[in-house]
Image (cartoon, rainbow, N blue to C red; front, side, top):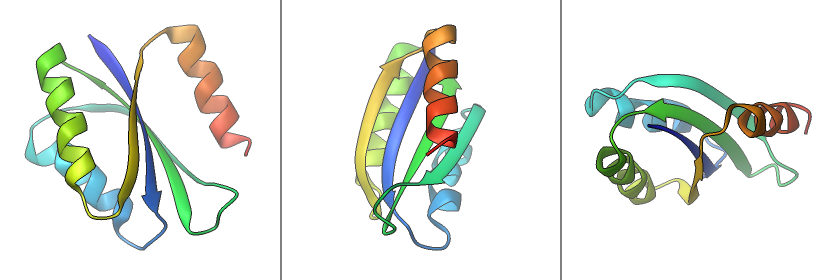
Length: 93
């Protein structure tokens, strides 16, 4: 099962590394990662696509929410067309 994680984080140096590091420590593969600033310069949006069993993906979301600089984590079911549009819209903001 593939899952899209939409994550809002504080825009600080090293935050992307901390988020990606969580996946590394748990031995989960990141298929796609996109990070872009939002209208609020203090917040960055990160989109991550990962694959795994449903319970493990839910565990990743819980762990992401525990990170200090993470403000919001949304899980979005993976659909190839919708995910492509989501990533393009994030890149164009």
